Image (cartoon, rainbow, N blue to C red; front, side, top):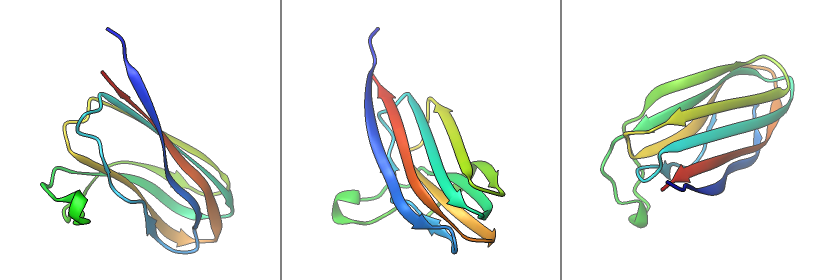
Length: 116
């Protein structure tokens, strides 16, 4: 069986001086997802992966309204975070940052999506 991949950019240049969230992405057709965040400065908080099974009309710009945390990575200084998700059985995915203190910048949050 051969697999195909799609590279995406979820976010670039986001301030970690406040909470933020990426736009949701539809992951219903994917069998594997990898997300990597690269950040600078001295942020303190956590990066969180959230999922939603909400039925929405993204084409009409209506985002899911119900989210649940499925993974997180504490942030205490400049660095990187990597999330791997196998066989998602939900429709939507996003990454959020919950700030505790400090400041910094997310250089990029990129992803690699695998499908058949």
